[in-house]
Amino acid sequence: MEQYPIPQFIEQEGKIISFVSFRQFFYIIGAGVICFLLYFVLPRFLFIILSVIIGVTAIVLAFVTVNGVPIMNVILSSFGFAAGSKNYVWQKKESPYPFKTVKRVEIRKIEEGSALKVQQSRLKKIHTEVELKTK
Image 1 (cartoon, helix red, strand yellow):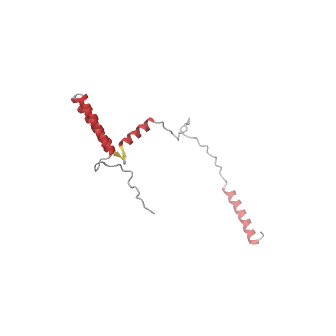
Image 2: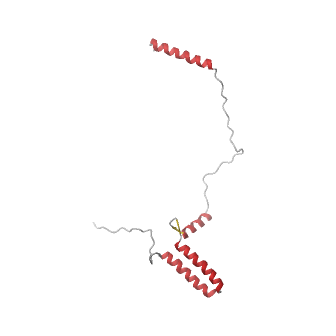
Image 3: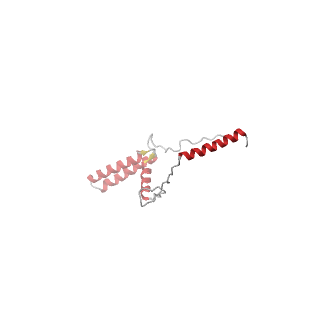
């Protein structure tokens, strides 16, 4: 039976240079192309401001990760969450009163003497039955 190599580390992106992947490379090249086009279209002052903003944005998109996830995925997920519908499962029932009234059961006092006498007489009856072995 022939053995075939099993691909490992398939979660990692392919690298062009030691630390730059294809995705990062194209973010930076795309920002460079946009800045190059803006150089010919806009006045010098506006070009410098926009090229700094575009360059910083491209570097952030290319290299920043949040908990191992690229920042672009985090941004798209946050927009999807904000725009999507929410499903709330639990909803509190509204009541007219803030507290629920509890009806308490009335407790009656038991006369101590009668309860003890009943128990003693019952106990004496069982004692005599055991002694006489009637049951």
